[in-house]
View (cartoon, rainbow, N blue to C red):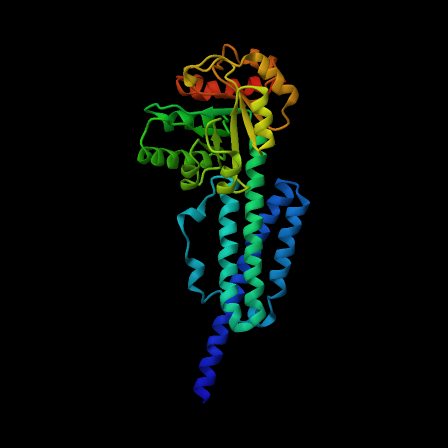
Length: 347
């Protein structure tokens, strides 16, 4: 009888230690996220939601659980992983801490049932609330970066694609679209995965041209759709609200339709005739001027834009441009990127 009681007490102490460790883990992760919402985004609502969750976690942290803590005897304190030693961007830092919080909440949900029936149900609901917060915040991050991006690189097939894109990222590029019309899906998947990682290492957005399935497969930040691609509503249903959806437009009617359907940004062009859009007449600078006066969402002038004509496009009203050949085929992508960005910021 005494032995059974002793064993039950030992199990209780272990449960207390598990709860204590994961309550700490959840609060720490929420605090890291809260600090970015507060100081990085200046968003009182998101910071307040993090604080509310953090305080609710803290309400369950009893003296009994704290007393069971045995930090010197915890083998987990020495365990680490190379990925924990560095963070490549704010997005990766936030993602890591959301994962940390969600894992801790799942542990608290299960082991909490041994402590208090209400604890399991409370942390189950909290886990769903954190999922919602993650979607909101990561979507907010993406859209903030979209608004701050003035230069947009759309790729075309070249042997040294990764090297060119990285050189442009080093020059300050923050938005990349992977466009590949001829390769098979195995190659597309491989290249898109590598480019997505590269872009995220530099804190840049990564968009997939046309293919919603590929965007989901590689966890891209969004998709760019042509006029003949999926309707925006269907793409939104598949991608969710947190990812970015862009639409190509060539005239005022297509622009207004894209805005009404919920596009996050639009392409305006082709400004000049370009081999990227074979057989498509140039929309001209007049459409650029129209967009400058009538488009309230981010828009990028595109089509045949290079160092020789970018200032004409800017003078017509463009504050954001998308380029293909002028960067992909450049001998010095970093310098060309820096030049384009400097011109786009001169007004």
